[in-house]
Image (cartoon, one colour):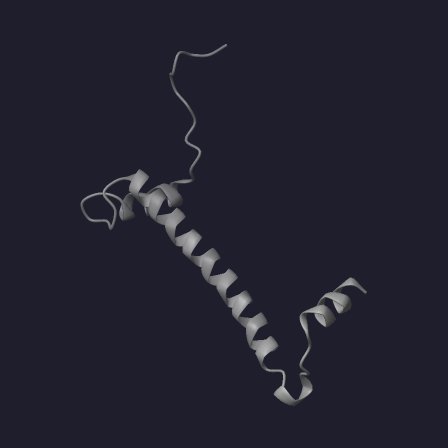
Length: 85
């Protein structure tokens, strides 16, 4: 049964708790733990967006690296027919 909100084990090892304490508070870069967590989420999102952008950029770079003399003009009907095959 529940203990009514009594003692709970600390899920963080001391080294991690000490690190977060150094980042949060008067001497840290964040005012509180919630702000620190939001900042981590924002940075993680930015990193994921940068990875996606770099993948897209690599694909476009490869596509545009094709020499123009290997391309041939096609009509819309020819493109549609080619894609149906």
